[in-house]
Amino acid sequence: TDFIEQSLAEHDGPQDSILRPLSFDDFAGQPKTLERLKVMVGAARDREEALNHILLSGPPGLGKTTLSLILGHEMGKKVSITSGPIIDKPADLAGLLTNLNEGDILFIDEIHRIPKTVEEYLYSAMEDFRIDIMIDQGPNARSVRLNLPRFTLLGATTRMGLLTAPLRSRFTLQSRLSYYDHGTLQGIVERTCGLLKVDFEKDGAAEIARRARGTPRIANNLVNFCRDYAQQRSGGTITKENAAAALELLEIDTRGLDEMDKQVMRVMAQNYRGGPVGLGTVAVAVGEEAHTLEEVHEPFLIQEGYLQRTAQGRVLTEKGWRVIGLEAPGGNQT
Ligand code: ADP
Image 1 (cartoon, protein in one colour):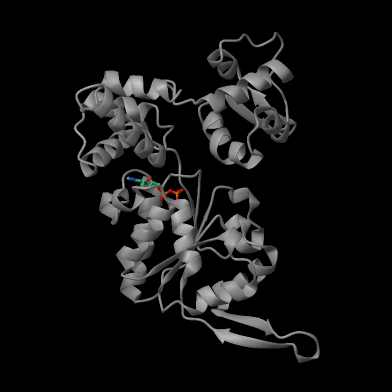
Image 2 (cartoon, rainbow, N blue to C red; image 1 turned 180 degrees about the vertical axis):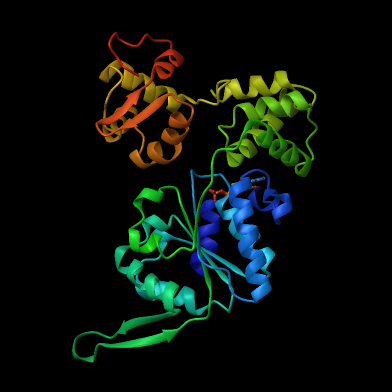
C-alpha cells in the first residue's frame, strides 16, 4: 500500500484529485476507447464477473490513470495504483496481488518498465490467477503457490512498442489514446475553470486549448498559470489577451510548441542538416533525458508533422524547418 500512495503522489499534480472526471459521462473525448470500455464494463457487470485485462497506451497526461479510476467507479470496485519500476521483485507483486479482492483493479502505470524477473510472474497471475513464489534459498528453497482473486490488470504505457509480445497478448483489450482535438480540449479547459471557480471568456479558454498540445494535463496546468496571471495582471477573468500574454511568458507559442521542442528542431537543423540523427545524440545536445524527448516531445512533434521517425533516425520535415525560421537545404526530400 505504500507503493500505491507513493505512486499516485508521484504521478499527480496538485489539483489532479479535484479535476479528475469520475464517470464515463464526465470524461471528454477518446470516443473509440470509451465505447470499447463501456462494452466491456456492461458485459462484465451483466455476467457479474471481473473485467478482462486492459492495456491503455499513449503519451503522458491523456487520461490513462483517470480511466482506471473511472473503471473502478463504474464497476464498483477498488483500484490500486502502482507503477512498473517500483515493483522491484516478485514478492512485491505478490504483496500487491494478494491484497486485492474479487473484481478489484490493479493499475500498473509504465508497465513497460516492470523488471523482467517480475514480468514472468505476471503471466500466470493474469492467465491462471495464481502465482508460484520461491521462498528461502539454497537447499531449503521451495515454491509456494498463491491463489489469487479474479482481478483485473489495467496496464498503462507510453511506449506500446517496448512491451514484450507475451505480456501484450495477455490483455483482452489494447486501446491507444490519442491527442485531444481542439474543441474537446476547450471543453476540458472550461470544465477546469468551472471547478477552480475561475471566471473566463470563451476566447480565453480557446487560447489555452490551442496551446495545450492536445493534452488535458497540460491544459489544466496552463489554466492554473493563466488564472494566476489574470489575477495579478488584469481583472481576474481569463481573456484571450491575458491568456496569450501568460503563455508567451511561459514561452509556449501559438502552436503549443515550447522552448525544448524548438531547441530539438534547431539542433537537428543546425548541427545535423535536418537529420537523420539518433534521438540519443539530440538529447545530449539539448541537455534533456532521451526518454523524456521520446515520450513527451517527439510524439507531439511527429503528430503535428514537424518530425519524422525513419529507420536511420529522426528527420526534420519541411514544416519543421519553417517553424524555426530556417530553410531546408536543397535536395532534402521531406
Ligand atoms: P495519464 O495517466 O495518461 O498520464 P491522467 O489520467 O493522470 O493522465 O490525466 C491527467 C489529468 O488530465 C487528470 O488530472 C485529469 O483531470 C485530466 N484529464 C485527463 N483526461 C481527461 C478528460 N478526458 N476529460 C477531462 N479531464 C481529463
